[in-house]
Image 1 (cartoon, rainbow, N blue to C red):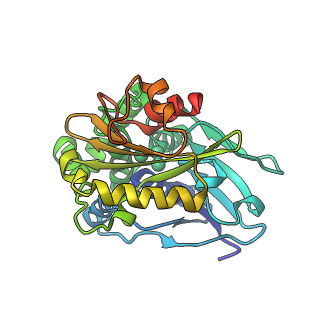
Image 2 (image 1 turned 135 degrees about the horizontal axis):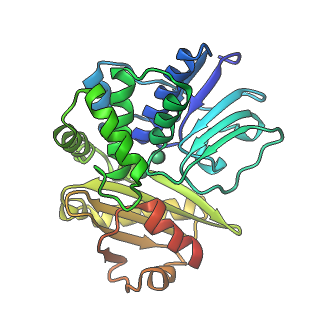
Image 3 (image 1 turned 30 degrees about the vertical axis):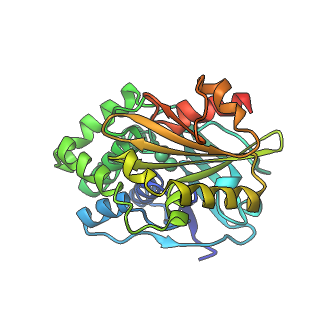
Length: 307
Ligand code: MG
Ligand code: MG
Ligand code: MG
């Protein structure tokens, strides 16, 4: 595998990380370059829905990369969210829609960053710019990633570029966006057979600001109440994570994808940040944040600024 150029998204991969890696590989192949999409963690149920729909296999799982391994990053740049060994890998390119932090290379690279709602939207524009034909498989992969990251274009992260991409991908993907999208999102909310440990791991990201480490995890649901049935156990495992990783704050956002709100559970020595950031007092370590669905645009900037 060492000679192959590897493409991957972040740890605890979401639909954008998986689909954009796969789409990147397809685009590269169509351009005559040989690259390989891989993944840094389990496929979540939402992404599995997409792969089942297309009848295709998930990319291979990797644990680490060797020194000097050529890699293409999608949907992330922060080393904390990347593969083990990333510091000594050769980062050839980054295609991402997140803030740039804790990122450094020793050589020049391609860096394609756009503040869009989804990495797949950037890749969609790459197909257009390079004049490469978009076929059904990559159309479904890109449409699914856009639907996932923008919660069917309802998240405040959604841009006109995401709307346009999804609109133009729809006939090629040959899907009913509303129906397919809702089914796909709902597939991801089936949390019953996850242990609490697994549940907070589905979509957890670690951040660092001036040496202060914090983590924001998110789960999508159609019933916040349902997830809170395991509130006591969730708090227990969050506290354990804080102790093990030396975190100053842990925020779990339980996001109602139908009504576009989130209930957060916040633990750690820096929970005072929540009041400052969102004007809400924590009650029983919880706060209801109306209209908040995006970690990237609503939770992280406020927390990052005030921590
Ligand atoms: Mg992502
Ligand atoms: Mg993304
Ligand atoms: Mg996400």
